[in-house]
Image (cartoon, rainbow, N blue to C red):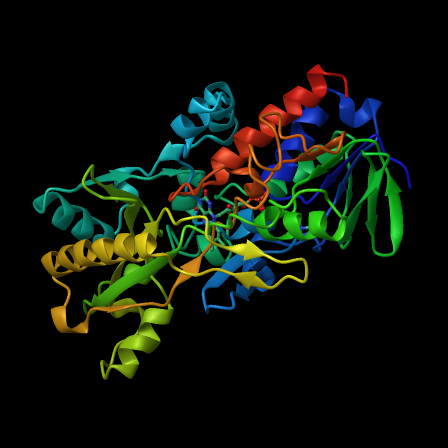
Length: 421
Ligand SMILES: Cc1cc2nc3c(=O)[nH]c(=O)nc-3n(C[C@H](O)[C@H](O)[C@H](O)COP(=O)(O)OP(=O)(O)OC[C@H]3O[C@@H](n4cnc5c(N)ncnc54)[C@H](O)[C@@H]3O)c2cc1C
């Protein structure tokens, strides 16, 4: 099979490149092919497509493998992250951010969508001098509120009404605009001939193209590059995951599990490398039962601590991952846990019940970073080979990264269109 442009992966980054090309008319004038490892999926069934990897050091990393990728399981958070950091290295995403915010309709959570638990945590934070602000969301709250389940907290297992934006709707759009979407097609290698991209191999077949955009995510993109004999020692290194834990405790009958998740962002200039956000972790029920508390999901209140972790991880070609906590990471997590515990106690959680969940990460990236593997146009040293996913982020955002990945992908889409590539 031959194509003018091949995009690998239909998640946050891949779909935006496809949309930018489709809207410029390239979807019809040129053969744009979007290859996706996973199957088509209904957004309400998103939980089926979770894929959890555990690093050699026991840190769990989550993602989703299906058409639309990890966007199907997000909490719907859409803040701008790393905006200033990227600007300082010459990448100004302000226009791309604004365009995406308009196209998706990103807005802060309306006050009437705050549940009881979120309100209590917001009030307790304010009493302790920390600011809790409504989180910007990629959620259509009119649609969310008209759902019989109201804000239900199920964003991360699949929105039942499609009120939350996912890449799935844009995959459908670009299909109508002429982009050929091929699911169940796992790319193994990029074909490199005389120092330039010549296509990819997938499912034992070759797909020829002089322009390849890898957007398979922060774990899979470096694996593809490593399997392709990509000439750089930096590929797969510098992995961050925005490590997080949830600190939780007992508050009988609060029904926090049925509230929208992460509806507020708690931060303060004194917070060194972490953010806090209201979060229900199912895992905390088991922990509390194990501690002897007879509680169910409706009896727990919790706060997530998400750190801007150091880029200490490595993705190897065989898929094994090394990711450990550095001293700096441990200090940030400890400071965050101390403050989260103070807030929970102030909100009325039973102090002795307070526990923490294990280390997790949901934002793997940095493994083909700008300045190390790609240049500021997201092109690699292999001519015609670009990257548009979380792997290019030059540092951990320590905050939701999806909008930033999408803004970088939009900028790349425009570059490809404007340079008639
Ligand atoms: C539970 C959870 C909640 C989250 N919530 C938020 C949130 O609220 N806000 C936020 O900003 N971020 C959130 N994130 C993170 C966010 O979803 C990711 O950072 C973002 O989707 C990454 O975009 P990407 O394009 O790099 O990868 P993905 O969106 O994962 O897309 C990669 C795509 O490539 C496909 N693929 C993989 N390998 C191959 C291959 N070999 N060949 C072809 N296709 C392949 C995958 O199936 C997938 O479709 C969350 C993540 C998780 C796990």
